[in-house]
Length: 184
Image 1 (spheres, rainbow, N blue to C red):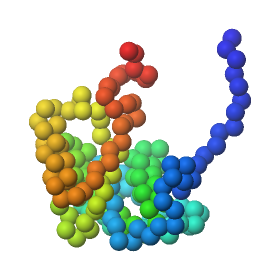
Image 2: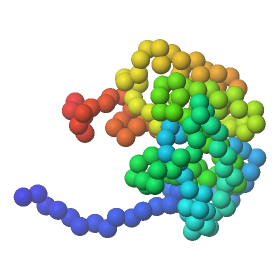
Image 3: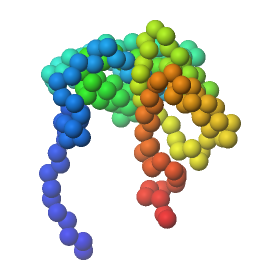
Image 4: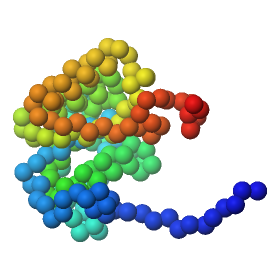
């Protein structure tokens, strides 16, 4: 029988993690905008207010941008898309105090995803300098056409000075498997 150890789990807030990674402290990001791509779900403003108040961090100004008719539509399920949306906003707002956040809501389709990215890149009203993407799948699941379209959009972002940060995915960055961990 394998030996089991009992260890206490410890949680860290986004500012604590930022401190561990030596992010700048005591900064004012009020002149910046972070764009966040969301392909479903939504957030409740009262929950975000409570979160930022508990952290002692100023709540960012949040602007919703509808792409292809999608909008902030919370489902009430914190373990689904709503949890992802809230987490994205909470982390960005907590590590960049004073930042404006533009949330680009789009349909969860290849076209919706691409349109959200291009809308954010060329948004002259909110002007995000950073675009955060935590939705998606490894490129191995994309069509060649979708990969080429995204590549063109990312080149456009570079040309206008928008940095894109994309999560590697829940199952890794390069390979998707029916079971986890992926066999080698």
